[in-house]
Image (cartoon, rainbow, N blue to C red):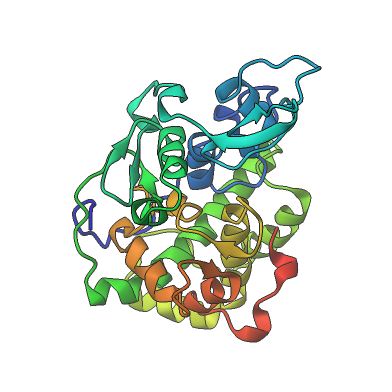
Length: 298
């Protein structure tokens, strides 16, 4: 595995503002985990039309059939002999070049690609091959050494991740109170209950025993953060399953115990179908069956 030095540091709360990440027509990235905000522009530009036009498509005329024709990552629209739009594999060389090191991504083949566009274009051109089937986006940034995740650390991972997700949501709530746009109204109502509780554990360098005790005592405070993070990543497509690439935003140094992320989600994939379903995700974070609610995926 590739990654950073092993650490059991407490969750890091991010200060990234959605307004700092706005592009195109200036629509805010509402209700996004800061980690997801950072990765969205680089990994999924086509998911946001106002980004796609400027980043990955040439300016099209009103009469161009390809203008509003969507293709999955790695493919581009092309007119066939009948002048009808169709999706074909994009040439990696046709992808826009990276501007900074933050544009680079690491593939599961341990190769650093210039951009996510180049990686998905490469994967598309390898369709039907074993290498293409195995190639996925592993994480953002250049490939690096990742220390092995020890069994004792793996046990800690869900506790620290749950606490981190709760605190990220609370931070977004506080930012939203000063400058609306960080959370949707429905999200704000859910997070307000956590924020106003006098029983909640405040962010800090807590021992793992305290995190376990708080989860047992304040279990209800963790239900929505777990649902929320799943919903933020399940967008390409939104099918209640997380692919390897959709999990990439959690494989960054800003996430607590980053080096355990891949192993943890491999363990979560109970049926070994290379995807983490909503129920598998919730179960891995200790959410009871009766509290797994698809209506909370917003």
